[in-house]
Image (tube, rainbow, N blue to C red; front, side, top):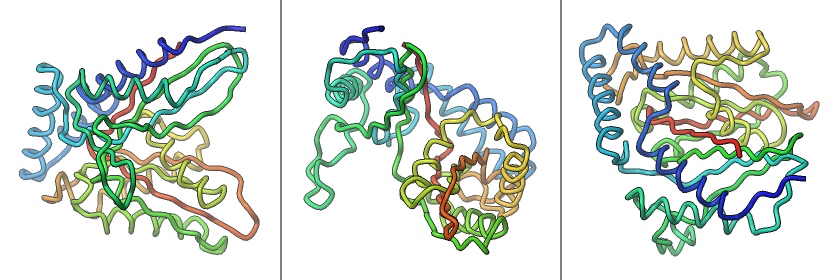
Length: 279
């Protein structure tokens, strides 16, 4: 049995959130450079160049890549041989609180959705927990800006809608979003489960590196088809037109009921932030 201390989780969460907001993940950076080289529309190419310059300046000067430093989403994979004797939510929130101050991150969370009073420190975090084998604790942070989060969609499709129904819904969701989520986007797609499970799958899909396809060839092919159809929309970087509307599409799936086909789309802007540490 391995014991994890509260202070270690807090420190890890703090460092990861500062890093996630100051440095673009290598997979996303590589993807944007690749699309920049392939882009032929002059306005789109110039916009991608400015996006790249912004990332580079943020990392060099240790400042946030975007003014929306996001709502703190934290994914914990806790090994079954790990012992935790503290309040996980409180420990994570303390790390987020410290990151907000030390990393100069904008306070973007309100304590009540209708009264709208700002908490002042980006807490509380949204924490997801999965139990896995082993004696490790994996911490993945994903600051979620709401320009893109607000473009999320979910639909309870009919089983008869099938593969084409999923394609039509996902492409339509990105088309309706237009320039609002600050494209080029990364689209996370959740298929199956229940209403809430599909949404969680879509959010978890955004954690996958942009260059990694689904291990099932059927879904890997579907990801490529969706990416091609989305980029054919011509929305382009920041909505100015071009070949690059999306950098990647990632699908996660789960078993579902015989009478249902839930499908959710969760969109990330070009600042597709995700950082992981294994304790």
